[in-house]
Figure 1 (cartoon, helix red, strand yellow):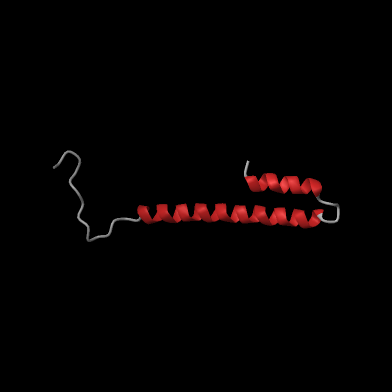
Figure 2 (cartoon, rainbow, N blue to C red):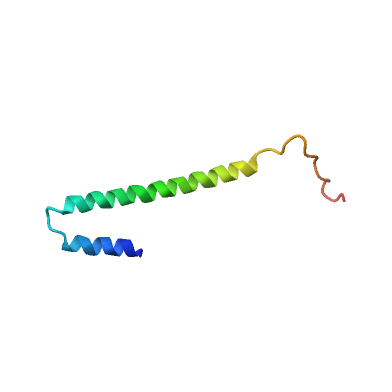
Length: 69
């Protein structure tokens, strides 16, 4: 488990009732941050894969057929 997660839950145990909404808001912000990082990661992967799946430019000659040298 990530050290920051352990630290978060240990802090939650010591928080008074008045401070719990503040800590809950912090936790929600961290979750949103993690989801955003994950979403950006997958978007970057898709972009990279799309870049390599583009058709070959017309000025590149095709290579030999299978079995030809």
